Amino acid sequence: MTAKIPAMKKLPSTPRLLLGPGPSNVNPRVLEAKRPPLLGHLDPLYLQIMDEVQERLRRLIGTENAMTLPLSATGSAGMEACLANLLERGDAIVVGVAGVFGERMCEVARRIGAEVVRVEAEMGTALDPAELVAAIERASPAVVAFVHAETSTGVLQPVEEIAAAAHKAGAMVVLDCVTSLGGVPVDIDGWGIDAAYSGTQKCLSCPPGLSPITFSERAVKRVAGRETPVQSWFLDISLLAGYYGSERIYHHTAPISAIYAIAEGLAIIEEEGMEVRADRHRRAAEALVASLAPLGFEPLVAEAHRLPSLTTMRLPETILQEGEAQVRRRLLEEQGIEVGGGLGKLAGSVWRIGLMGENAREENVERLAAALR
Ligand SMILES: *Cc1c(COP(=O)(O)O)cnc(C)c1O
Image (cartoon, helix red, strand yellow):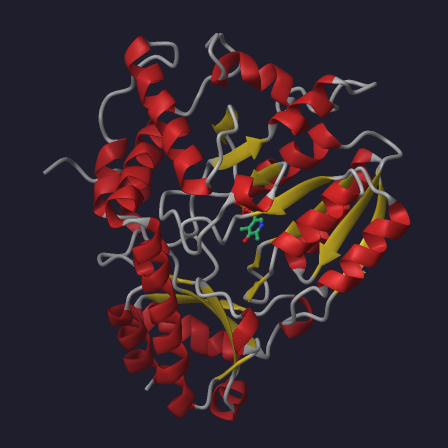
């Protein structure tokens, strides 16, 4: 036994079951994979691990894009990377806004100086592809961006029709895959996506801190042809290409241990197979709705648009009366289970229950239902 580290004294003696909007629980193999001693970030052995991570990412997201890499920052940085590289001041962007993360895309684009055209959907509903198509035809934007899996509501957005309309108008398509990747199939090349980003702490079940990103050749060309340099030095993909491409020259120090972890996390996904994994997510989400129905919980989102990895539930009167935040707190402190509260307009009336990656199992649904009973 190694000595307890003082700062770790506050950790609970049994691990929390993380059924909120992320992070999710990490497979013990991933935690183990983080432990080995560091290698240098230019060590040939380390570069082999990086190559392998990039190759596994390409397979998982369905792309041959050379520019596919685990960005050294969280999902929000992946969002900034996609928008900051593809947009210049004054460019138009059409953003599908159906929740908090679509809203965040607008704010990032606004700060870049882009002209933001919003196409909105009521929280809990999907975007209307026809409305997006009409907006794209009107605005002829440089970029069309939307969220595949909106974590603030639990809606899974259909992609292909919007992507096709964007291409017809000559726009680049940016897709947020933070809560879809590893939970539902993602097919970047098949769908015609030009840039996409994800995060490690949701359905990939790795610790937070990395954002897998990908840029199509078309997107890379557009960045090369910019009139002004990308405002962010750190996120400029033409500079990142020096390290993540074949040259492997210093750009910033890669987070070695986090890369060990994602290498193992991606290997685990390949062992299971994405189809089996997606099926596991679907079954767990169905079990959740069925198990909580007798307690008075009702799903917010219509079945056709429901996201398996995150389910938003309207709360029963009993919980509203006790105070939903109070009940969540008791779940956490007495049962060791974390669930998420509502965001924005939905705050106070719903819970967001994540069954992501490792956690998408019926035994976890049973544990939550038993705790609530
Ligand atoms: C979590 C999340 C993000 C932001 O990721 P961070 O890792 O928290 O920066 C972006 N988009 C969606 C859909 C998310 O769920």
